[in-house]
Amino acid sequence: MEVEKNRGGIMGVKRLVEIAYSTKKFVIARTPPWGYKRPVVLRGYPVTALNPTDPQFAQRLKLALAAQKVRGTTGKAMYKGVLMPAVCSKIAGMITGSTGGKTKEERAAARHAAADAHIESMKAEAKRRGISVKV
Image (cartoon, helix red, strand yellow):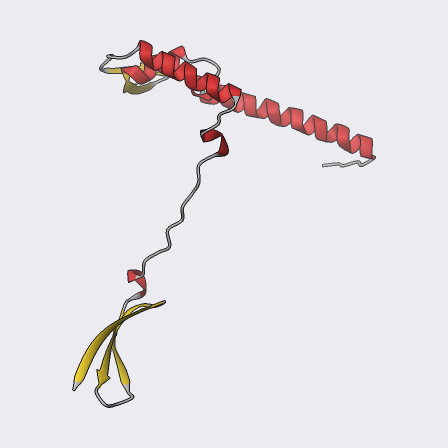
């Protein structure tokens, strides 16, 4: 007499056939490797999401006020060479002081300026420590 049982394990579900009144078990099927469930990684949100810093709060308020002003706008519009919804282009034009309002070249120039300042501070620290580096 044969009895089928499903058993879950680390390698997935196996179908076992047990022969009654016997100690022998036979594996008749095994889940293929691509059928296993992958673990779910839960990612948290940033600490400042619920308690924003003052600059973040100011930018959120700017965005909300700009969005309120353009409520009801429909259609498409060009913004910095990209066709996008008119609401988005108007809001991007209103908000200043955010990275969204800068061109690629302006953002690159700002990053290079920051890198130059950082290199200069590292040179000053190396000089203070008496380290000389030549490239």
